[in-house]
Image (tube, rainbow, N blue to C red; front, side, top):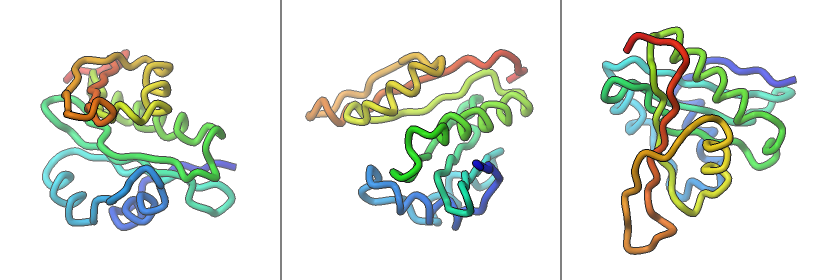
Length: 147
């Protein structure tokens, strides 16, 4: 059974180290820097006692920015990303946000497909020399909120 709960920076960092797409996961100090003094949310997904994934985000430019997240390869295609996204979205709505934003890279096709299938739309592309590393900005308008 999947359980989603709030977590510490250390738990999020430990989980990020288990995500193969993160070549150099951010250290705890980067999380502390980004989350300090702003509304933020750290979530951890557990399945049968094992860590299955995480999600980290914070307020940025008046919207909720879904900064980091991932699902351990053993738990992919089991609804973990969907459950984490739903929990994050519910939290953002409850705190009055009208938009969730994030960016990903062009080579992370599963993340792009997940985002598009979940109501996000592309708002900008930051071009790089290698098109596979282009940064793609996405946004979802939430149904309720006041920000």
